[in-house]
Image 1 (cartoon, one colour):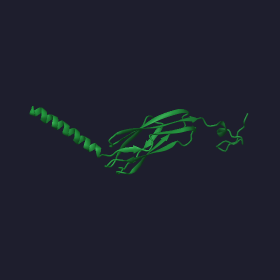
Image 2 (cartoon, rainbow, N blue to C red; image 1 turned 60 degrees about the horizontal axis):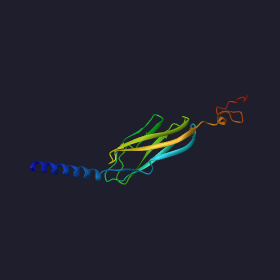
Image 3 (tube, one colour; image 1 turned 180 degrees about the vertical axis):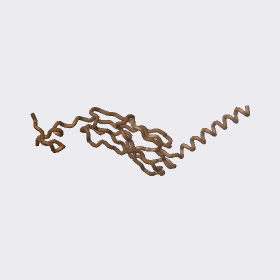
Image 4 (tube, helix red, strand yellow; image 1 turned 135 degrees about the horizontal axis):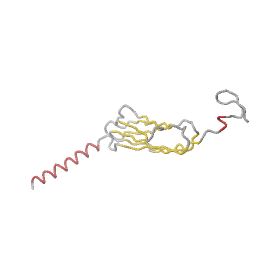
Length: 148
């Protein structure tokens, strides 16, 4: 009986000890976790900064930021974010791909919630024909062309 009681007290103590460590640890809080680019023209700049704050009591270290595909490139801070400090996850999407898109970026850190998932979405429309063949008869290369 004493062994069972001792084991129970030890188990409860370990649980509270683990909780106390995470209660004082770092925490990441994003201003927004989703961004809608709306409708973009093909090739237009497509970048967003996801701003966040360390709302915990210990330094926050972002260990990894990974996108769901190669057309989306995240960039995370290298230095620890002190308690109360702010940081940015920069995300760039390749807008040369025509059509609707919805991508996820997984941010991994030493925060209580170790993974956060950010989302970007939008729609890329093809460049207007006028961009390739403008009314003045000279394209972007400066070479005149005939419109037949």
